[in-house]
Each structure stands twice: as C-alpha cells, then as structure tokens.
Image (cartoon, helix red, strand yellow):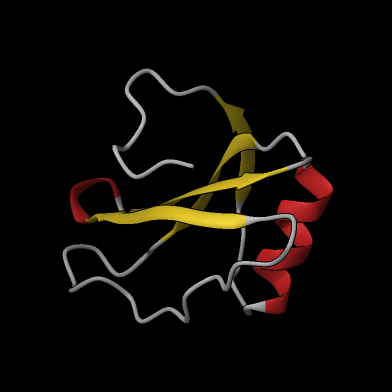
Amino acid sequence: MTRRLFVLERYDRSGDAPAPEAVPIAPTADTRLVAAVHLPADQVVLAFVEGPDAEAVAATAAAADWRVDRLTPATWIHPPQDRR
C-alpha cells in the first residue's frame, strides 16, 4: 500500500500556553502518525500523518478525537530517519 503524507492543523486559541493535551493518533492498517508539534507563537498544532488518502487520515483523526481545522496533502523534503 502506498502511503501519502498529510498535515493536520489544529488551531490553539490559548496563546503561549503549554502544548495542548492530545490523545495520540493510533496507527491503523492504513495510517500512521509520524510526528506532531505545537507552535505556540503561531497558536497551531501540526500533525504529520501518512495514509492512503485524506478521507482515511480524517477518519483516523476523528477516531482519536482530534479536532482538525485543516487537512492538507504534503510532500517530504527531508523524511525522518525511521520512516518505513
């Protein structure tokens, strides 16, 4: 199966507060959370998820109770070393 990269954005309206608590997006047969980062200055959480399509990634995020404000296809410029 080919996995494509997607970025989930969740806007955090709490300003410079600590990173919001979030349940990790559990991997499924089709999707995998690669990384998630909190950018407090931009008030956003970015999650990098690999999956077959946007619908599968959105469904996996919803199952983990992640609010998704924006879902965007992305491409790796420099993939993580443990990428499979």
